Structures are given as structure tokens and as C-alpha cells.
Amino acid sequence: MKKALLLRFEADAGVMKLPLFEYACPTTISEAVALLASHDGEAKPLAGGQSLVPMLAFRVASPALLVDLRKLLELRQIKIADNGVTLGAMVRWRDILDDTRLRTAHPLLVAAVEHIGHYQIRNCGTVGGSVAHADPAAEMPGIVVTCEATIAVSGKAGERVIKSSDFFRGPLTTALTPDEIITEIRLPPWPAKRRFGFQEFARRHGDFAMAGAALFYDEDGQDRACNAHVGVIGVSDRPLRLVAVEQVLNGNKIDLALIAKAEATASAAVNPPNDIHAGGAYRKALVGVMVERALKSATTQRN
Ligand SMILES: Cc1cc2nc3c(=O)[nH]c(=O)nc-3n(C[C@H](O)[C@H](O)[C@H](O)COP(=O)(O)OP(=O)(O)OC[C@H]3O[C@@H](n4cnc5c(N)ncnc54)[C@H](O)[C@@H]3O)c2cc1C
Image (cartoon, rainbow, N blue to C red; front, side, top):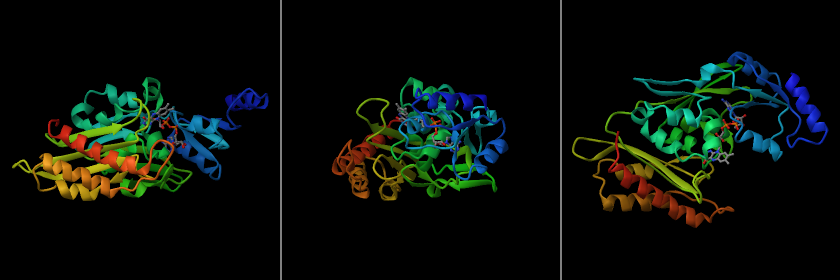
């Protein structure tokens, strides 16, 4: 509470950019949930602060209370087991890149995280913060949707597990209720020899993608693709699975002709709006190229 008073004082003196807020730093998940629930939708969790703090500075968000999750040590674990990879919500991008086990346990995740932000962002930003923030161009929500991950959350009504297909509702909008925190992101098992590719286009490395593609497929023993999963980011109000492209791939050998068909199908499947970074038509073409490049890298890349 001392810190909250200090923040108030500086804001009142006109020194601070952020709006007034109370600050709490609980040490248990149940305490964090109780704090969120006690503020009638006016409290927000604080993870790495890489999106929330700029939003406060721009007055896009002005919660009455920030509930800092940094002392919830159980949310910092990376677990690798037969049932897949489980990332605690407070696992940072840096933790993923430093954990050499993940290069075989989930190489697509690692390939995507390598594109996120800059050194400082990767040292602070967390998987839970990114998934809760739900930026349609962010890599982690794209991986969650492509891999059919599940999102475990805790709230005043208890715990629940949300399917990725139900979680993202639109730009910065999710199925979370205001008293809920994400505790874990659970990625299904990644078999050996799975082929995968991740590609994105951004003007500068570390910027959010103008369009990107994450994909994987297995092979049926006769070099034909099966179980294809294709996800794209930056071309809609949320990350998308492109089932039409998966249908093009499944049951077929991935050669240049099929890749060209997949590219055209990907472009046809999306309808991105114009925005300040690019026109919709440009993004539509770009996402096809991202799928094409990701497929080409998948033909040479597997764990
Ligand atoms: C210059 C810059 C470049 C960036 N580039 C990229 C990029 O290329 N790709 C990319 O994906 N991201 C990028 N980011 C964002 C960064 O990856 C952050 O990690 C991410 O936006 C949010 O994570 P965070 O831990 O910082 O969350 P915070 O900013 O602390 O929180 C974000 C939101 O999630 C909520 N929240 C946080 N944790 C939880 C939880 N456990 N449960 C429920 N709600 C929660 C908060 O209340 C808030 O609404 C960039 C950021 C900056 C500043």
C-alpha cells in the first residue's frame, strides 16, 4: 500500500504519466483472484507490463487497482511431459528461448517467440499477458490457436479450462471475466519428426507482424501430409485457423504445385481490413506468401 500512496503523490504533483491506481502484489493465486473480484471489474492483473503500462500511459486503460502477479512463483514454471508442454502464465519470452528442452519439445513455439519484440521486451513480456492481451498480430495467440492449446484460468467461481477456439473474441477481447487470471497455457504433445514452419513479415525485426503464418503437419509414412494445422496472424480481428488450407495439404505430398495452391487458398480465405500499416489487399497477398514460405521451410525442417 505504501507504493500505491507514492504513485498517487507523484500523479497529483503532475510528474507521472500514468493515471491514478492502487497497487497490490499478492503471493497466492487465491489472493490475486480475491483482489480482482473485490473491485467490480475495475482491477487488472499486471504481468510484464509491456502492453498494460503503455495502455495506462495512453489512458486506453485506467483500472482502479493493479494486481501484480510477479510473486506468484507457481506461474513461472515450464513443464514438459507426455501430455505436452505447460507454460505457467508468468513464463517470459526469455525463459522459453533459454530452455533448450523446448527446441525438441515444441520447436514451433520457439520459432515463433524468436520473432517477438526486442531484448528488453523478451525479458519482461509473459505468455499469459500476451494471450490475455489478445493482439491479433501477436505470435503467442497464433501459436495457441494453431496448436489447439487450452487456457487454464482461476477466478472467483473456481478453475476452468478454455479451448483456444473459444478464447479469442476480437481485438484485445477474450473469454476471460474480470476476476479471472490465466494460470497456464497447455500445448498438446509434439511428436518426433513433425514438420513445421513459422514465418512473419514486419517492417523491422521486433515489430508486430503485418502478417504471419504458423503451421505443422505429420507424414503418413508415404510422404503425404496428415494432421495439418495452419494458423495466421495479423489479418483478422483475432488469430485464425485456415481449415481450407489444411484440407489442401492433408493426404497430399507437399510439392511446389501444392504449395502454390495452399498460398492461393490462404489469400482467398482471409479478408483483412485496411489500417495505417497496410491495405487489406496487400495483407491478403502477404499472408499467402507467409504460408508459402512456412511450407517451404517445413519441407526441410522437423524436430
Ligand atoms: C516495443 C514493443 C514491441 C513488442 N513487440 C511484440 C511482438 O513483436 N510480438 C508480440 O507478441 N508482442 C510484442 N510486444 C508485447 C509483449 O510481447 C508483451 O509480452 C505482451 O504484450 C503482454 O505481456 P505482458 O506480460 O507484458 O502483459 P501486461 O502488459 O502486464 O498485461 C497485458 C494484459 O494482459 C492482462 N494480463 C496479464 N497477465 C494476465 C494473466 N495471467 N491473466 C489474465 N490477464 C492477464 C493485463 O491485465 C493486461 O490487460 C511488444 C511490446 C512492446 C512494448
